[in-house]
Length: 264
Image 1 (cartoon, helix red, strand yellow):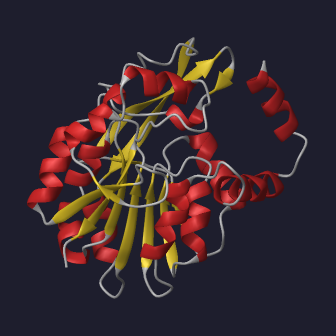
Image 2: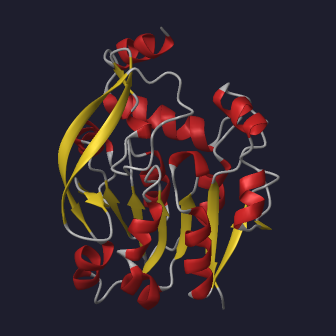
Image 3: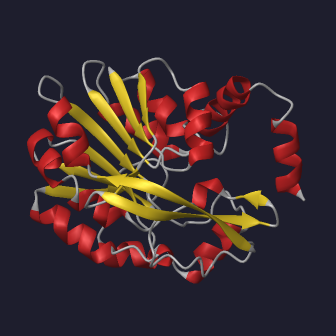
């Protein structure tokens, strides 16, 4: 019912107004998205930021304020259309999925009744939405998939990528593998959403990035970047914390966003 009400209200308000409120809500009002706030310290006005899985563009807007340019990837056609309406001028929208190889794939958008759950859309087959009791079905799209290396490296000869945000609902490791050369050359700070419940290869991501000189940190207390590993993240995603998170608790203790910082 609440989802239907939100969709009805949004349909009567200009998209840019809704978007501006969302940005304020998630970065300034309590409880704000602390990762969005913490990310600001890793941005630079003369460097590029990348947003993989941009959805409706909240993180894209945060990145745009302190970056020379933002490149946002969003394969969901509805979200990509919305992004083109609301994105700041220094944003490039690429309506494609990011993976470890080029081609085509199926994007699944779960629905609650007839309300799309855009934030949970994924191309990751291992994500079975086992913890999402609201899902009653799916809308599917055939989408093009690309790699960060093939898409960005040719265009980044005179630019530097300072930050990459990856929110791919379980497909994060493929995104990273497809950007291996970009990551090696530019050494950006990475913010990766990793959740065991999404079928993500969490241990593999930690090992792969640590082999490449990246140090994992998380806002365990919501304020300070603390050392974390794959086992510690597993403990912070136990059933009790997840239940509180899904119930909308402000202090669930559930952690799913990891900053990977390049050594040196």
